[in-house]
Length: 262
Image (cartoon, rainbow, N blue to C red; front, side):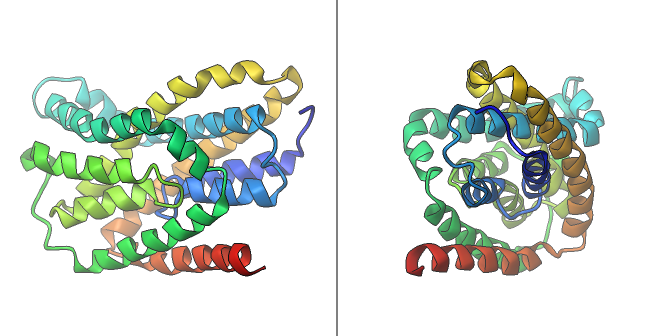
């Protein structure tokens, strides 16, 4: 590939930055829009571009939660939180390694993305029934971290929102809303970093002429991601997570109807 319109990389960067943290599945949106924008056959460029966009959102998490990240490497409660994050990361790492080929086939088709967006909507809607919060970082157990980690592992499926599934799981195991959203976004650091390192070799296939568009997309993902995280903190605190269900059902339904009947 020799070139790509700038508006497409900016659009996809903004899309990644917003949907990585809003509970509407970044994977589904990238799969859907890459196909509909005519980028589905770009092969190595598209895979490397995806890695770059995810790296941009990783930087956004670091920019918002840098105090928490420093705290993790200190003694006491901070180091304990770091251990809980490791526990929560294990399921997704194991599933990603063992079933990598299977998930890659799912990402080649928009129908699974549409279906699991519908599932995401159901999960978000059910958060209205979450029990009263009782868990802070200080009294979180490994069992709660493990259950949230299982939700992150399931969210490898295209269309099943990582942030939506993990925040919802946190709420269902009685985490305080602010704890659930902070833990979810901190979990994104090892998840995205690990995936980026595994897929980093794909950058070798990029031509020099498209490095600038890749960089522009990464910066856009970072900027929009930073704003989205700040916004999500307020949304979850206001107990309005369930309202995203309507969006997931709408987009997922449109995709399924289009692909199955037209």
